Structure formats: structure tokens, C-alpha cells
Length: 144
Image (cartoon, rainbow, N blue to C red; front, top):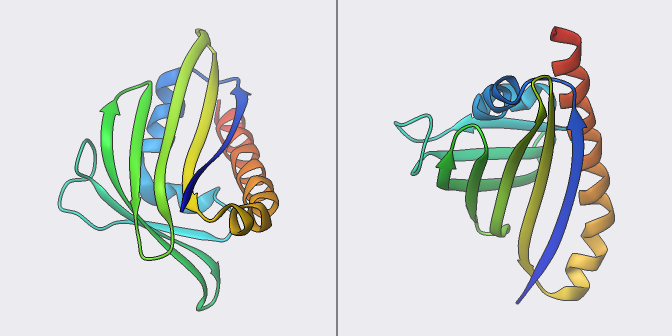
């Protein structure tokens, strides 16, 4: 197994607190994450120790991603560890206020997988995340 890095950034013309609120509302991520249903699986709903399950796929064909929050610093950083049988590694949401009404959202993942497998899935993963983050931006900017 090898650690493989994937990351992207985008600017959302919405205040940082509103972007954080959208990200921290785990189940609402199902509204903008491509073909994904997200649910909280722990008694706590925010902060370190929160457990989340995200199923990405169509019908019963897909992949389950189990995560646990390992760092929680509103409204700037949330780190998770992927603890599922298939998806292993870490992820990070990092927000930076560019102005009162503009936020940079940096998303990154360290995926533990053989390099050949990572290279096969990376283009689809990158495209899916780009589509999802663009949908989040559209959703938030329309609510202004």
C-alpha cells in the first residue's frame, strides 16, 4: 500500500461561516455530492469522534466509505480518517476567508492503495469531486 495524494481548491462567493455550516451538516452533503448518500452513524453529530458513512453509487452498486472526524476547528478545518474495508486514508476540508463574502475551499485526500489502482480510479475520483464541489458552490451562491 502506498499513500496517494489528490487535492483541489475552489472559491465560493459566500462567507466562511455559511460554507462551514453546509459542510458540517453531514446529511445535506447528499444534496451536492455526486451519487452519494451521507449519514451520521454516531451519537455525536459534530466534532472529534463523529462517525459518518457515505455510500456512492447507483442502487446497490457502489462503495461505502466510513469516516471518523479526527480534527475539528470551525470554521476552518475538518480532518477525517477513512476506516472502511475498501477506502483507507485521510481527508481534509480547509476553509480560508478571502473576504467577508468569499471563501477558498481546499479539499484533499491521502488514499492508501497500490499505485496502479490509484492511477485507475484517480481520474474518475477527481472528476466526481470537481462536479460535487461545483454543485456545492452553485447551491451556496444561489442561497445568498
